[in-house]
Amino acid sequence: MRYNTIITIALLGFELLLGARDRQEGLLLLTDRGHYISGESIHYRAFYMEPGESGQSSWSKILYVELILPNGTPLAQGKVSIETAGAIGSIAIPEGLSSGTYYLKSYTRWMRNCGPADFVYTSIRIYDPYNDEVLPVDSTGWEPKAAGEMLFQEEAQSPDMLDCNLDQNQYGSRQEAMAELTWNLPNEPINLTVSVARAGLHSGQTYLRPGCQAELPGRNEVLPETKGISLTGQAVSASDGSLAPYATIYVTVLGAEKDFFCNYSDSAGRFYFTFPPYKGERELFVSTYHSSIDDLELLINRDFSQDVLQLPSYGMQLEDSLAAVITEMSVNAQISQQYYPREVTIPEEDKGDEMFFYGFPTSTIYFDDFIRLPNLEEYFVEVVPQVAVRKNKGVRRLALLGNHPDLNIYPPLLMIDGVAIFDVDAVLAVSPRLIQRVEIVNVPYIRGNVTFGGIISLISRDNDLGYIDLPSSGLLVNYRMLDIPWADSSEEGVSDSSLPDVRNTLYWNPNLHLEPGQSQKISFRTSDMIGEYELLIRGYDLSGKYYEKQQRFTVE
Image (cartoon, rainbow, N blue to C red; front, top):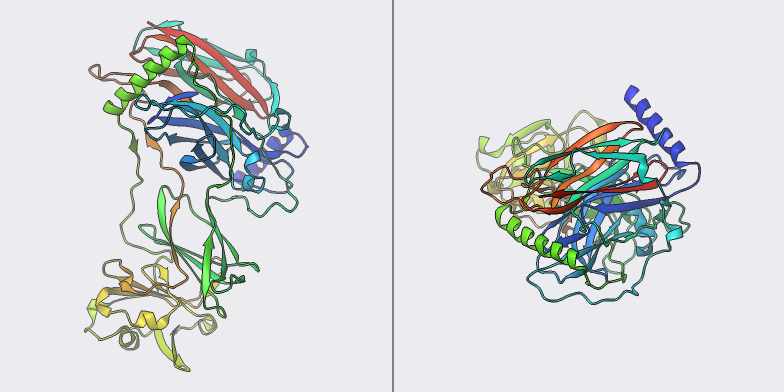
C-alpha cells in the first residue's frame, strides 16, 4: 500500500509539472551520433510524454523503432519497453547500404490511429566504404508537420543551467577522462543523454516530432499497449468474410515458455492479447473456435506500420574536416568488426521441469506405467478415472469427473503439448505410442475471461504434437517480442594493449537523471585515435523544455 501511494504521488506531481492542458502522446528520439558506417549499431534514447488529462491511468508501454529509407522502406525493426519518461535501445545497421540520409522512425501503437504524419523521425547519415552508390537526393520530400505543432516546446533551457567540468582539456590515448555535471535549475529535475564521439559526428541531424493527440474522434481503432506487447486481429467466416462475434481465441507460445492465453472476441470478432516481457522472436500458434460457425478464419494485424511516406533525402557534400573524420570512422568500424564482432545476448531458456501454465496438475498418468493399449480411448476408459468418454448423437466428447458442479457445465480444455484441440475424434486417433503422459486438472479453470471445466493435457514423447491434425483455423505466427540487447564488448575500452581501441563512440549514457543542485560524475576512457572530440549533453526537463550543451577536448 505504501509503495502504491508513493507511485500515485509521483504521478500526480508529474502531471502538475506538465500543466493542466491536454497534451499529445509524443516522442523525441536521440542517438549517440549523427553519422554511422553500415554494419555498426545505433544506440538511442526516446524521451516519451504521455497525454495529460486523457482519462487514462497508463498509456503506451511499447515503442516501435525502425531504420528506414526516405521512402519508408524498413531496413531494421525493433520493439523496446517504455519505462519512466522514455525508452532505451539499439538497432543494427545492415551491411552494404548505399551512402545517404536514412531515418529512425519511432511510434507507439496508439500513434497509428493518427497515421505516419504524426510519427517521430530522426535523420542519420550512413556511409558504406564498399558501396559506391548513393541514395537519390530529394530535399523536397514530405515533412510530417510544421514546427509549431510539435509536442515539445521550442523554448530551450539555457546551456548555463548545467555546469560540465572536465578534469582536463587534453588527454592522451587510453587515458581516463572524468566530467562532473551539476544541474542548476531550481525545482525541476532533468533527464539527459550524454554522448562522446569525434567532433562533427553529432552534426547534421533533423528531428521531426509532431506527436499524436489523445482525443481522436472516430480514429481510435488501434488500442494503446498499456501493459506490454500485444497481438490483435479479427475472427471472420472464411466463406463469406462475415464477422465471428464472441469466438474463443487461443494462443499457445511454443518453446520453453509453454504459455497459453485465451479470450473471447468482441461483437465485431476483434481480439486483443498482451504478453509478458518475452525477448526475441517467438513461435505462436493462434486458433479459434465458435459454437455455430465452422469455417473460421483468423486475420492477424501487422505489428509494424506499413504506411507509405516520403521523407527528404539530402546530398552527401561534406566539409574537408568532416570528410576526414568519416574516413577515419570507416576504418575504425572495419577494424572493430574484425576484432570485436557484435554479439547477441540470448536469454537462457529454462528447460527444467517442463511445467505448463496451469502449474501442478491434480494428477499425472504416465502411459509407460501400464500395459500397452491399442488407442487413447481405452487409456481414458481404463487408466484415467477422472476422464469420461461420452457420445451424443454419434459425436464423442470428453468430460472431467469431480466434486465441483461446474465440471458438468463447462467443457474441459483439451490440449496436446500446450496447443488447444477442439476435435475429440482427432485426439482419440493419436497413437498412444507417441504420448508420454496425460496431466489432469479436474477443477474449473479460468484463463483470460474463459472458464473451462478442467484441463486434459496430453504431452507427447518428442514434443511433436502426436502428429495430430491441428485446427484448420490455426495460424503459426513468428512474432517479434522485445529486442534482445547487443553486447558491445568494446564499450568500456580495450584493456589489452596489443589490440586496437578504435571506438567511434567513446561513451554513451542514455539515462542520466539530475535533481536540482545535484552533481554527478561520469568517466570514460579515450581510444587510440588522436584528434578533437565532443561531449554532447541533451535532454528534457519535466516542463517539456529541451536542453543541449557541447564541450570539446582533444586527445594527443
